[in-house]
Length: 158
Image (spheres, helix red, strand yellow):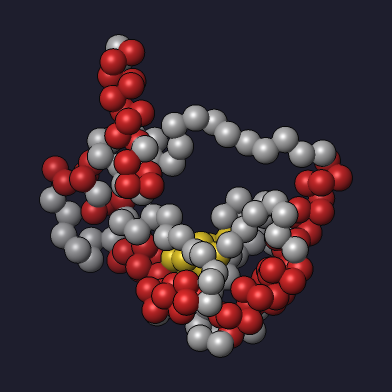
């Protein structure tokens, strides 16, 4: 691949908040590797806070939390929940001053890169359901317990 081709793909990958692959093989998340530099003690505190989010939301019937396999842990790079009324919940949270994101609004088989497969809606119902219900809740390194409680309270008030 020439440098011009790489530059063109990088520009395409930065479009539309990187949510849709335009060609097979596109990296549709970030054009540069980026990571925060933290101490090991800081990582432990960060992960503890991230794990506490689920404790605040565990009893909400319509909200499906991230699953963690037995004997495993999760770093929660994103905290993605699923809700059947995702769009209305997102609007409610926005009105409460809580930002959320929909990271993958289009399932892979319905993206432009795979249009040549001519797959109809419903071809992959689980992927379509996940794309229609996924909502990324706020998650950042400095998020405190009061922030977590405020997000949980706003979801409960929906």
